[in-house]
Length: 364
Image 1: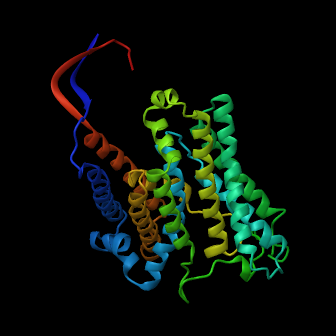
Image 2 (image 1 turned 90 degrees about the vertical axis):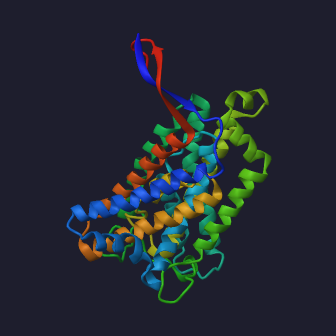
Image 3 (image 1 turned 90 degrees about the horizontal axis):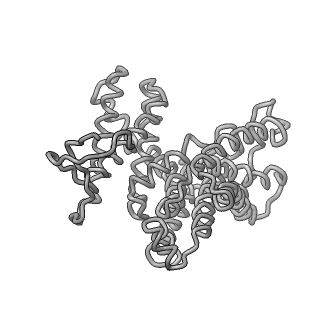
């Protein structure tokens, strides 16, 4: 037998402000960590703080870039959060985004001379279906064979990436593009309208905000959203009430896949203007952090997506202005997630010292 000098207990009572502690603590620690990391790389603390967190607001163009990157993060995170609340862990948003980009690109590639104003809505429809179909593979394997959706969706990301590489280097490559691995440029009817001349931000940000409103209504005001949450927090009670676990799995993954697929369409129809080898700088993975940082709540995710977009833009500015590696962005995202999860432990649980508890030897 082993003895532990502490006991971890779930808090039965919490203040109304307790859920805000974890995200604010994570943001504060991430800000400090960014300054420290850039200082180690040779950037003065003042410049590091400016590059990462103030430069994104230093000009109209930089602010527009924040909203440009906020759009896909917000859209994907809202879709993922619905599944996460049901304890369905979709880690494949990056692959679903790539499939959405591929599907949405087919119309402007094969009908490049078209002037049909319905092309853009059709691209969104096809891309959303491609993302949903990619997620459906994991849903079927989980519902039919109880395959772990974390592993399945994660592996599907790699397959989607290799599929993209093959297509832009072969069947979908621009024959007039000097053998560069990219498709032909999309026609004007296949491009999202920009909001301001001279900037890249487009109307997709309004679509993402609209999806956030729909996500809030679905989770907070619909019976289906209630069933999903009950299935995640109290699966035994959900089964007793007759809620279908298979339906929750399918619905959660299909919603997340559709949202990610639409984000992929908006990338190729927005800032890229064509299908390329690099469609996403990691939006699918970063959106997982956004979803948790926002507490899996639609309003919280809105603010979390904005902060994550600031990190993306700040990292880009630091890279171009001070030669900082792009990997700093990824490191900061990891720190943000780890510190948030650690803070949630202290918010949701209480550690009692001095109480010894026997546990069987070898138990884990």
